[in-house]
Length: 176
Image 1 (tube, rainbow, N blue to C red):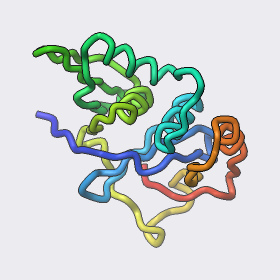
Image 2: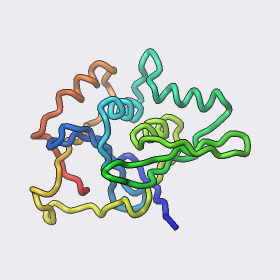
Image 3: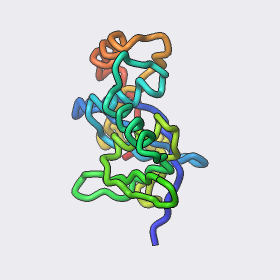
Image 4: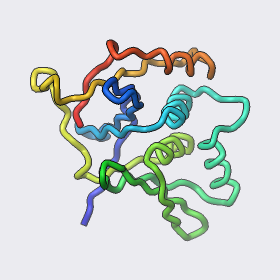
């Protein structure tokens, strides 16, 4: 039987080796990490919500929240369930009346929606990896990720400009 562990979004970054965005989930009561590579639109949506930036018109993840609530449901939890051939899988557990509906989702979309409710995020225990200290790392084996700084004072356009201006030299480390 699988075991789920609650995780939080620790940070968002840019992987310099692939020029892709990475959301790094951290075990709520521990130090283990789960990095998941995501698209730019999802990264922007997650970052906007984390920093309380609202757009004039709803983004796709805002629309998902409105649809769930409008149909009388609520998001109970998100679960990142497995990885297969380098692709992560997630589920959104939506409650309506006394029924629970499990909806297949990409982890990036599920995380963006969970942040908007807010709802807890869980990951399969076996997907989490121990954090690595700088002294233990092998420079060639660990991709680098730019930590995205606080963007509390940015509007949507400034945030987009900030995301596109991240440089490989700014990258931090995380464990796969």
